[in-house]
Length: 164
Image 1: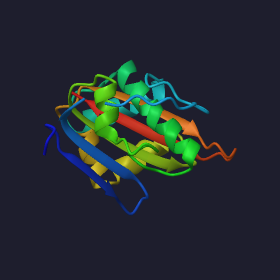
Image 2: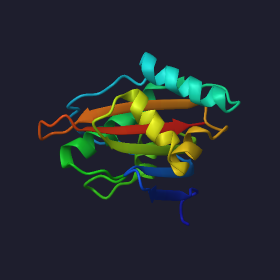
Image 3: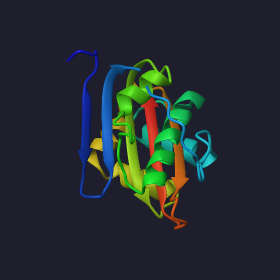
C-alpha cells in the first residue's frame, strides 16, 4: 500500500459496521451536528471502563480530538441517512484520522438505531469486530458522538473512535 496503514471494514448481522486502521492519521469535514453526546459523558465513560475492566484492561481516556472525528462521521451519516465510514467526497476513516492529526493505531465503530449508550455498547460487545476494537489493549483514548437523523426521526447515528 502507498500509505502506511491497513484498513478493515466489516458489516455484521446486527447492522453495525466496524473499521480498523493501523498506524495512521484523519480528515476534517464541515457537517452540521443535529445532536451529539459529549465524548466524556458519564454513561460512555462508565460503559468503557466496565467493559475493559471486565476483560482485564485499563479504561480509556475521553479525548476531544477523537470526539471531533466521531462527531464529523456521525453528523455526515445523519445528514445522508446512511451508515458508512466514508463521506460524500469518498474520503474514508484514514483521511479523517489524518486530517484531525490523530497519530498511531486507530479504529472506528459505527451504528444506527433508536438506542441509548448502554444499548449501544451492549450491541457492540455482541459483535466480534466491534468487540475486538473496544478490547484492543493498545488503545488508550476514545471519542464518542451521535447525531440525530436529519429527517426528524428519533434515529441516531453513532460513531466511536478509538486510538493509541
